[in-house]
Image (cartoon, rainbow, N blue to C red; front, side, top):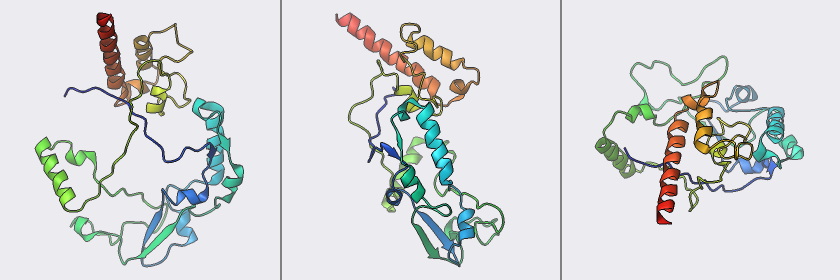
Length: 245
């Protein structure tokens, strides 16, 4: 495989200068669907995964504002935060009556439970969809045939757009913190940042990151190859400019 790693900015539908967003805005991006013989109760909501108490949200926003450079100008809307419910989800809850929450077509003969769920403890979080492991060993021709059949059967497609112009690899210290927020949790230390400008070359800076004590840069699936490929692209572009002049 021969390829180059080109970075594009994902256009956001709305940029927030104040967080958290209005409760009404959440209904446009998130919803909860309950299935079963009975409508959900408050006890069911308390066991629902992916719900966070509003004081936890406040603490997270305060930490980001104090520690992350990209959130330094964030305005925390405590008034809006108080509108979030103390218990229960802050989004639309859609209840659909069903005697079972299993899909007969996708149920194995070895699965003997009537429902996906539990009577005690937290609710299990189940992702319905395709995993990469199911298709990682299939040849390209087979993958194309499966994709075409999926479209013929009226299957859904997720399309994520991006900006028209790629992000610059030169003099762009926020490129890597925005690409790898889990590696740069404070938003600082990007390649070519003012703290290192004139002291370290970009290539040497990347080598130091790869030698970081917790090895998170080494162990990341994408950082080493993207960092190396970007150096190849910049070296090639710089060499072409020098020859042209």
